[in-house]
Image (cartoon, rainbow, N blue to C red; front, top):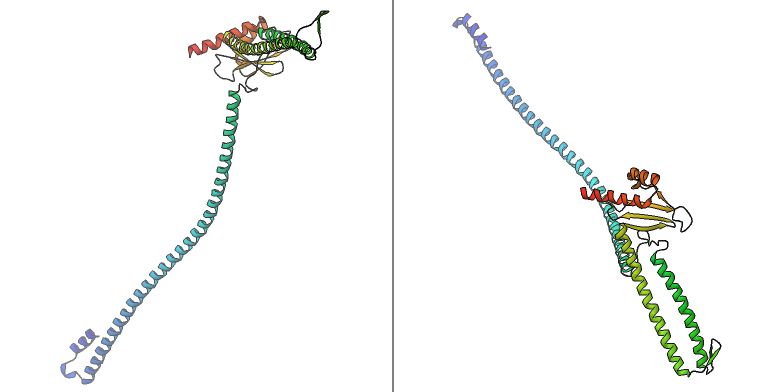
Length: 306
């Protein structure tokens, strides 16, 4: 507007200026100042509104973040509550298992103490250990002799008791159609001495037979190199002293009448590894002792190589 006015003023001569034109110029300038002031005020309001909008936006973002945090906290609290319930349940199960373990451990200790006591008393596990009796072996002969001696001693003791009863009653004692008259007191003393001697002899025989039986078992194991166990009736398990594992054993079964000596080799995991020895010594040579000797040599050679 000033440029227009100046161009207008330049075109006009100074004499052509009028007061009315000057008044309008002033009014225009005043209007321009008002417009500028109003524009500045509007810009200030706009800046303030933008600042308020930024503040509200930040508050809204903060509110959203707080809401998200509250949601996460609520979710964590619910999960934590469920986790605590699971932990309590697991703790209860652990306590139950611990009590069960303690009970089983006590029971195991009791069973081990019983087993140890039985072992100290000379007992053995019938599943793992069996006593083998050979046909016509010294143990059987000794037992038969012992039985005969015991029977003889029983008959002798019965005869002596009968004589003792007769003598205590004051009567006579007949022996081999001969009537003997012996003082009762002396006869009683003699009979008591004989009974004590017989009992002492019987006790000594028991001790000797037990010692001989144990010695016979040890000698069989040392000389043959096999521990012989009876698993079931007429079935025998042989475990070599050179066996690499306790499961490496041979199983034989008596196939004929009792005392016939006919044996058959039963199949086991260990016997399957001895196919060549079985074919050679059992099927062709038909000799169990040679087969057992060959197995012993094979196991011994394995340990020597190892």
